Length: 85
Image (cartoon, rainbow, N blue to C red; front, top):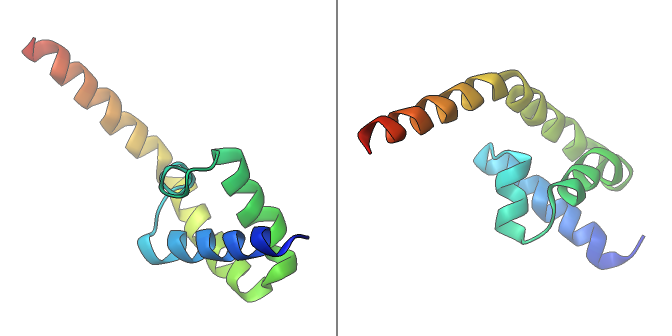
């Protein structure tokens, strides 16, 4: 694997852990696609740094468990904005 990919993978993973960020937020921050972030932190990271992989797994599982709440809030805000217009 190329060195810059390994560096990016570790940097993205550390960002997600520190900020408890979602894959979408991390992708926007680093200017890469959500698919790339996901591949970095789920596939590549396990080979590069297994300890960091287990930390990121906890954050990703937490985000997955909460995504229905975030989606509901976004929908609620959307309809509240529509009522105001």
